[in-house]
Length: 234
Image (cartoon, rainbow, N blue to C red; front, side, top):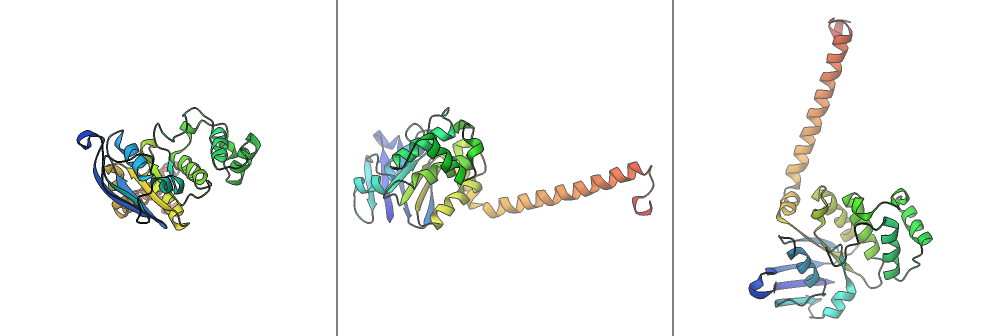
């Protein structure tokens, strides 16, 4: 499956979404950049066939077919559209999504689903209090349970905080499973992802420094306990 957006805009004078072109395909993850509070959701709605753009085109496998797009592409965690209510416990979110997927959706089935993924201790935790990457993994796993879903559009994962490289790696796992993934996020996340090597080197340097300081602190403590006698000679 391949979805292509060409010069799509939304709103009068493109105020809701300036001209945007991107594409996403089975087996890959693509980052679509949109700033401000509203534009990520607008782009997500258009890319998943749930909103018609003011101008521009959206095609799936070379055809303009919004119905097929809605059927085959899940819209995940879009603010005010498909995100779960903040106060709902995780087990409730799972039960609701299992229902949408046409599966058994009672509390026992939801808890069993969480058990299988090692998340049972979080069952009663409000979804708003779930660690960002765990939240996104749960919502994506539930989304791809729906019949006919071959891809997903994840909207503004950076609004939850956390490290962009963590959720980017997560979405790459879904791409490796054959799904088409479009992630809509801001420019700060784009920078973090495109400069991943710089960030990883900085983190490695920081860890090396911490290890060195830890070793120094241990030697200092040993020196103090020895009454000032050289550690090597004690």
